[in-house]
Image (tube, rainbow, N blue to C red; front, side):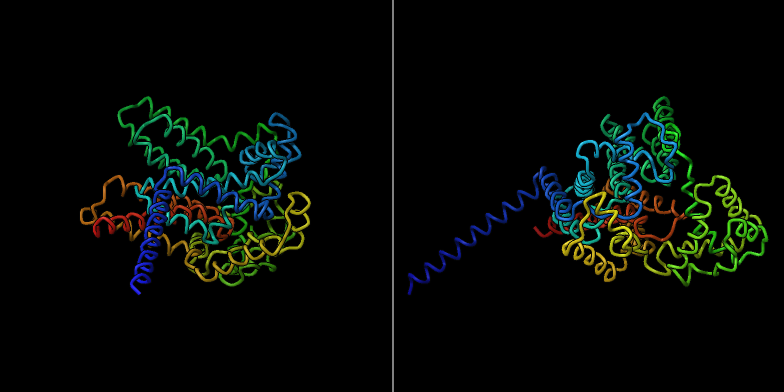
Length: 482
């Protein structure tokens, strides 16, 4: 009997030792500097191969078309038969990846790898503990992140660029050549992928002034460099001789179609008749009542003027005419548009992420050009994303997330001493909040709709904010307990 008891105790102890060693091994792996690289590689390998060639939508096709043209023709040809409707510099970068492999999946593998790696880098940089690694692993596998990690959307690329910009801002105090180079490259890529990001320029110039203060020569050089970088997305299409498409007109159409039925100015009716869109066909307050009809109605105007610089200029003038002719109407409708875009009326719209399911037109195009094959795993993956979206609606309500961020940031500043927070830590959280907020606000000036993908880069930073905060809190609790 005693022998049985002893053997049972021995086995239990042995299991305990093994378990303890296994736990030590897990902690050692999580603490390793290389963990984030190995994990990100496996994460990218898993997603990009299992769901090859990633998630495509209508704009993905047009951007890859341009990239393939550039790959085959080179950067020093004239492309007068193409337009600059989509940002050109990103397609130039994509063409370099296409040169290497002759397909589009490798670009998504790299995108997915950087998407994961940057999450780890920022969370650790802000929280300074390995607990964040555990949290990041969990968050990266949320359906919303898994889907966007392999989404052929410039918004995922913009999220990565924003992350690198934050990382450079955190490190810029060190004034090393590496951090300065990262700062300029990340800003260049960001404005190349999303031109609206130029709203960050004044804040970045102020930051340069605050860092270098009395070093006037560096302030002048770096400010000039930032302004030059900002102009490149406008210059490069001209060098390639691309037709001007005035892509910004898309956002104006969305707002214009919602205001014009309520206007008493006859100039608008004359313009609409000229392009063959009777004013009677436009319903008022579409933004409040009919989300899909709101989009389709704006497209009635968009398709008539797209490609015509004179008609685009005329629509822009008529839009601006509201400001001084009917300012109250303009403000009232603009506020409705903002309410829509910030998730007050409805959660943001998941409109593009399952294009092959929504429109049969796109599936044969994706299959023929990019070896996109629908299957049960892919459908289950995207359905899981939609189920997650319906269950956790707060991800699709920007006002709610930013409000919570502001409260937490306010408490950090108010209770800095009690929480034992360093100034650098609070500054880093401020960077995350400020950049995420200003970036999304840029869409309020000229928004092409309340699509969730436009908000995703800001959400990426918001997730990093909360994970870093949670990691910091759990680490302090661990220290106080032990």
